[in-house]
Length: 101
Image 1 (cartoon, rainbow, N blue to C red):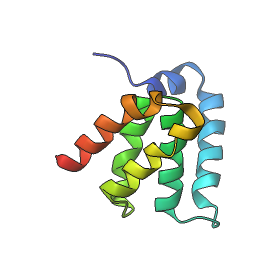
Image 2: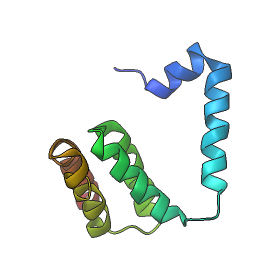
Image 3: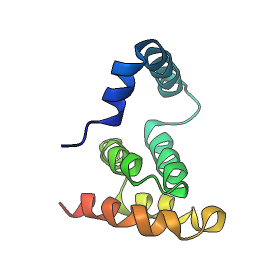
């Protein structure tokens, strides 16, 4: 079984992981965007990088924040003009599957 990369990060570099977590918590606490919008933006950014694992981890968070399947699909499709097809073909199937379960 493959280890969770974040668990390895925490084990191998606990101080850096704690600082990173603090950064994430400050972004979560910022008031400019609602949680759903932040999750959709994050999904789009990670999809543009082809980071299927991150998209897979954040789709349930977006859904819990009220995002619909159509909104998540649109967020992923937005990456086409910036990053091409890679993010769509690697991230869209898993994102859609989450809404079908």
